Image 1: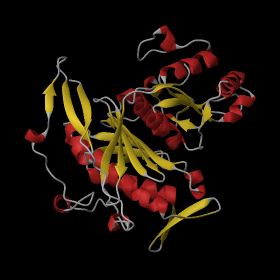
Image 2: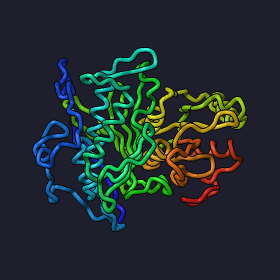
Image 3: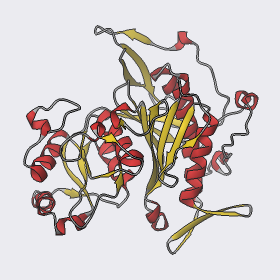
Image 4: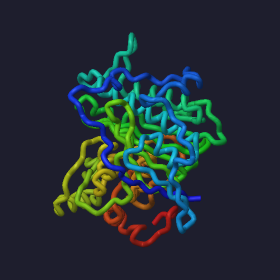
Length: 392
């Protein structure tokens, strides 16, 4: 049964800002698989005890199309939102634990000491590059969730057994710190992850994901997620006291002149990509490109318009990994009402044949993806009405 979700604003919800920061993020606890279930029940991931919300408190309506419409509200905590959005307790647990990891990574990124091309964090006698710190925290979070069977990361591209069940469990692929090469410049960077049911991360497609998310570490820290069975992409803001609060829903990507062109070196020997870039310039599109995939894709969701491209050429091969980056971001964009493409099909319809498979990609509004496909390949599946799951 499909589940729809409708969100409502319930008035002012952000706490008043004071000159003194809360101590909630001064030394956030690291996640450890050694925590007992007893300590979980009495402890808090977000500054207060986990609460069990009675079913009677959920506002659920029966819609005319027989789908359930769950009323979430802007201002809900992450826990409240997830409990209303899905009945799957395992998925709730996993997404909550990943949110805690993202919260902790945010602190580590903000306090990393960067010099030259390397950033390090000091924890006792241990020094690790900040991207490896993020990698470690995410693996620990998945192990701690008890619902992850296998996990792999861009830093450790091999399946790691997390001890979770196959039936009712999940497998997760993640890029721990996308944009780690620009951390030293203090640009925005982020975490990307996708969640697949069961134990398979190859022989599947992005459309098989049950959830995807990204953590964005900038002036604000946000956790942007999408669940397969509900519409929209949903943004949560990390507050001073360490809680995630629901602040925005995106359900439509509109047309607008904003472009983020990755891999411009490909225009040297890919004349069609050069033609596309020249179109953006000649039509006076606004350039908004940071060199970090997370912020460049996230701005499409936040601004609800734009186009992101990363195209290959004979001398510049694909570098973006389908499993760790492209497919999860594809779900986020398409649940937000946008489109994705490798030039001939939706990114979500590409079969992931191996953990290191790479691809070119474009994300954006419908007309921008049509233009991308027509300029590079002479036709567009969207314009031709090609059904989901079929290539042009």
